[in-house]
Image (cartoon, rainbow, N blue to C red):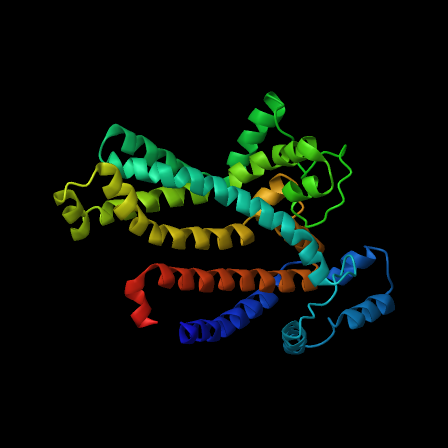
Length: 337
């Protein structure tokens, strides 16, 4: 297992290096000059522009800029934001808890609803309930996030007035973050049920929108995996022994059917952490995704290239953890690692 982990980590190095290079080059293809954006259309003379460009290191050749970026990132120095002049790492850590909390809540409802629906669809295979449930999951998987989010906002926020449109908590609550997870901080800071419900109310729509695709993927994977396991020899043996339907499905079959589902859940968490850009922008959620979008508009090179690299590290780490977990859950693979 240790050698398997070391091999995966060695493979991760070239992957991260390639991602950082692509991100570095693509960002510089975006029209606009961060120096001119900082100084404004009439904010600086040619000398001031040249001086600021030198201070930011933008007057160096691209290969030197990339080398400095990689060398500094290897030591944990991701530079300072061009807009705020704060260290990129501080800005990332300030916003990441919001993204992580939203992603975990979205994944939680996707798992709690997707696994039972997948099981029911498998047990009702080729019946009307199977067709209905899988059609719902297919629609959920195909739903454009921006359209789905706007429809929910129009219905629940504008028409019914049940949920807020944006933010993480009402302005009436003067919440000083402790952990960055508002569902926890509301209790730590003594806001009680009122503060907790305010945080939950703000999270309902973003989590529902963000978790729709994972829900559909988990439901379909659960159905397919359970149908495959139900055709295995040990399941037929259990039937021949006269075991009850509950024992066959929920004790023997489902436990093994959930192994690939666990893999999908882990990969979905990585996707949610890095793919919440549209959801965070739509609901003005102060997370990493919205931060990255604002950085694109401001041509904030340090934030963009470092943010992409940090998110890539998260994806690679989640993939490695999923591989380790899958190997641990499936004894047949342990001899091959």
